[in-house]
Amino acid sequence: MNASTTEGVMMFTNATIENITVTTTAAMPDPRDILIMQCFMMESPSDKSECLLDLLLEKIPPKDPESQQLEDAAAVIMRYVSPVIILLGLCMNLLTFLVLTMTKMWTMSSSVYLAAICVSDTLNLMITLMRFWIIEMWNIDFRNSHVVLCKAGAFLAYYLAHISAWLLVAVSLERVLMVGWPLQVKRLCTHRNAWIAVGVILLLFLLLNGHLFWLQGPFRTHPIKELEQIIFLDHECYTHHYR
Image (spheres, rainbow, N blue to C red):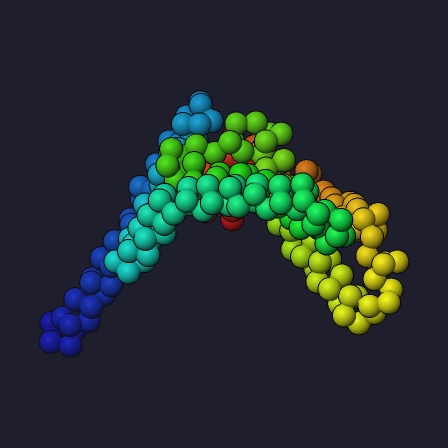
């Protein structure tokens, strides 16, 4: 047997061994697939969700130091600055509301808008910022306790923010009327018209944000085909599903 024939036999043998290795490797199941199957075999839905979530978190790469520092700084701000903002906001809004409603300023139509803003901002502080602070401090979310709180909490978070912004728009429009049409101010800028404007704003954004009562809610049972389609916990309150 000459050298070229020997080399050809060796190349054929190596290629055959590689094919056998590839075939054998392809035939072996992925260990992660086995773990996923074991998760699906669990009877308890909560155990199943936690098992799948653990597998998903293993695929997430570790955070870089800069991102971790930013998250730590945000957590410190949320933990220690939020209660200060909440207390100051409650006190200032209460004082402003009392000044607007219990003094001669109440005769001005703009006081109606400003008093309504005090109420909406106070509720927004209590429902939105205080919720995030409680989550940061004790990892408790009131939205997860009941489906009604889940829907109402999401609705009020958007609703209060919208009406606060548009009440400020109403105040600005009243200022425009006073500057541009000063002779019409006494006829247009009245308490009655201010209350009507506030009512229209409340009703308008009630209709615009009402869809959250249908779209917002706890997760339901869905078929899971891949690890990336995990529905995290059955009781968590979200508007949409993560995919």
